[in-house]
Length: 180
Image (cartoon, rainbow, N blue to C red; front, top):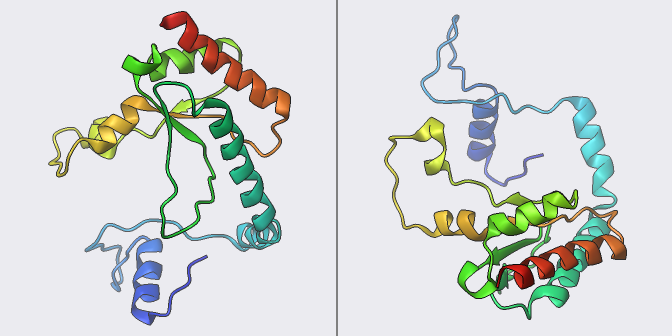
């Protein structure tokens, strides 16, 4: 769903979402477009999900708080702060691991969780590090590279139990102890 008070922005978004096809009798594209249109069925499911959105966000924020309460005192573990100008939905709980202070790096923790059949993932790899963009010009500093190197996305499903949380936290704590 897209909402805006600007008719021009809506028209541009619709144009891009329909492969940015120029008005010609043949397929001609002067801009890169996408095929991001949503079917009526997916739109109906999305509307239905809006009825539980507040509860899901509440649960996601509780998940974040559980992890933060359990791990924030550990040296070398940081949590993403909440911006003072808004309220995060905390859809995904991410920790940053400083290997010098924690005693293990992000990959050590991820692999320790994997050994216990607990899925976690590194933070998204920056676009300029993706093979498809090799050789493209990049501007800016190395913040995204640092986040990728140190960031770990923890399990944050809304069906997680206290036992699930304790298991994840326990593996993270054990990894720090075994590697210090």
